[in-house]
Image (cartoon, rainbow, N blue to C red; front, side):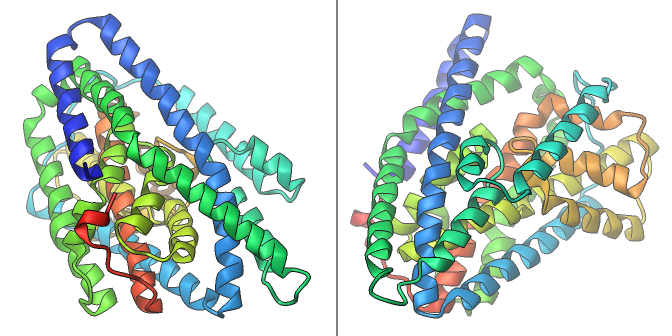
Length: 415
């Protein structure tokens, strides 16, 4: 059975199980504990997958002199998509203004947040300092950039420029195939992980209760997400590619990583699935998927920036009672864009930290009202991460079309 069907089925089963057992605290604790372990497992296997496949991809692209074009298309897609989605969040709010709802965490102390930001910033600074590459790989838990940089360095010198290096290049390419076999297996059985993740997601929202009293805000947020995924991003993809491919085909074939991203709010967990789906279902060449998707995972945070800009304006509207001026809306959108490029360091909390850091950077004091985000953070981060995963799939397809290396995969052959 195709992955998009099994993952949808797992989602519905997770919802049904939560409706039946969600009132029992033991059930909620059980599914949340299992989900936490499974999310860590996804991140655990992603590190070696990215290290080996990215190094192999860099060597292969250098061999055929396609590295510059690949990097250019990837970074251009990341930059423009993030700017456009940040602006989209402000535009939708201007058309459908809605105040951010109060949650159970409104007015909470920000001291723990400040300490966490400082700790993450320190860990990031240390991880980016050149050191033993094996120590870097072993110590990296929530930041992919050091892994990518180390893999790029290896791949740069792995180019088969003479007969002495060629055997190493062949061996690395074989290991890359092993990593794709691992990611494919993870994708095939990932529906079971999504069942627990969706159960934890729905039980958290049920226990919070905000979703039952903030229908207007959530409705506008869902309209925004659907408009972006079904309208804006397909149009942007068409402009980038000259309308040479169907973005809706990419969307339904990528449902597995999108659902994994939505319910886990962790792009590391979904990325092994994204890599497998990109190659097996979207027909993207291995070296293109291996090189573009990790970069998009790190920098293509348009979905998180979109949700953050919309949330910030909703918070300002709730605090002041007035809709911000056009100038302030644009400044907030640009602030979210800038902060989003470093938000991957705060894995699983991207929306909150884009919101928090943008408010501090712009000097907007809401008297700790931003803490109200925490109550529905699984939903906000989930929607943002789902759109980020879709951006990664579209970005890889853009590069594939620019390089003219993709292949058509028949429906019966997809994952």
